[in-house]
Structures are given as C-alpha cells and as structure tokens.
Length: 171
Image (cartoon, rainbow, N blue to C red; front, side, top):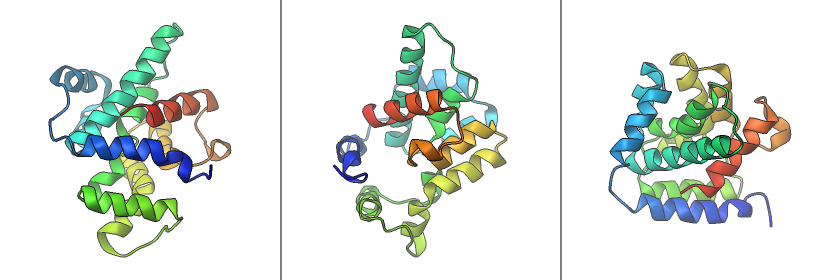
C-alpha cells in the first residue's frame, strides 16, 4: 500500500461523515470549551460541523486512551486533537471540492491556484492560525505535521503516535 493509499479508508469515512449535516453533540462541544483557550475555542467554532465532529472524535479517542493507560496527556495534546485540521477553515471548500483536493494530495499535487491551493496548504495555515491564537507550540506544530512521516515530527513521538492513530481511526 502506498503512503497515499493507506489514507483511503480514513478519507472514505470522512466523506461519509461530511455528507451528514447534523451538528456535533452539544455535550462534546461543551467539553471542548473546557479544553481550549478562548482564542482556540473561537477557531474551533469556525470549523464546519463535520470537521468539529471529527475533531471531537479524535480528542475523545485520545482522552479514552489516556484514561485506559491511567496517564494525563500534556496540556497541548487535547487542543492538538481538536484543532489539527483548523487550517481548512480558510479554504472554504465544499464537500465536492474537498474530494478533489484529497485526490490531488493522493497523487502528490501540492500546489494549485485559489481555494483549492489554500486547502492543499491547510496544515501550514493551521499552524499559523494556532500560533496567532497563542496556542502551545506543540499544538501548532501538530497542525503542520499531522500528515508528515513520524521521523519529521517535532512533537514528542509518543503523543504524535497517539494523535495520529486517533485521527486515522476516529470518524
């Protein structure tokens, strides 16, 4: 399986989620408000409903894994789970546009003009938004690095692996 094709099951689940229009569970959204700073929460609320549902699923998966291991995550980890895709908010692509963008990424197209180009650079833009919001440097780094190979991560490997696994298994 190629590096791009290993993401296909994740992308298929995300597409199915994008087609659902209901907002996230209000209880989960209230929980996110206890995890994020005011500036981070303002960013989180800019997410589309399907992105908020995904982010909450990732964060809850991380939280459950930490609970099972009886360990508390560092303060940056749950915000990183909730905001790893935040750069997508500036691209403003609909579901069809996101499918095209995902296909571009699978075939390693990294640049394009306009909205599509902004989406293709969402990881870097997410890191910028988080830095501007005063997020922990590891939270911003994870936004930039979450699709990079583990050997390029600057976040602690243990937490990067947990976040990456949660991202790829949560819907």
